Length: 153
Image (cartoon, rainbow, N blue to C red; front, side, top):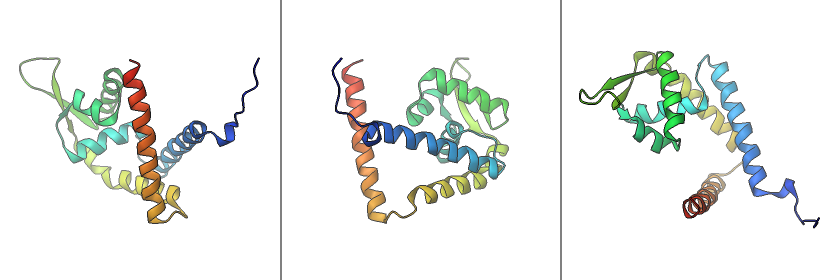
């Protein structure tokens, strides 16, 4: 077996994956501390609905980068939690719009407080320029991965 010159501790992939895991845990902890019973995936759904209430499943799936099965599962759980309600368009039972409930709007402040705290923790010690450059680099990496996936579907 050939020995590869590879150091996992210097791997971009491993570092990003590890940062993602830590970020997810951190957000869970901050939500728990602020007594907000949602997941990071649910936060993304709430974010887009707070920006534009009444999206459909396809729009939410696209905005959150989730497949239809995952976004359906997330929305169904949020509906059971009383955070969302589905409103049909009247012509097709399979097609509906997703709306926020009063409960979802009540937790908005605590959710944003948690997310802003998480951002502060992550950005500690980074200048504004470093933060902006990091976003540029991460967006390039995301673009590379999307291009590869599209070419190999």
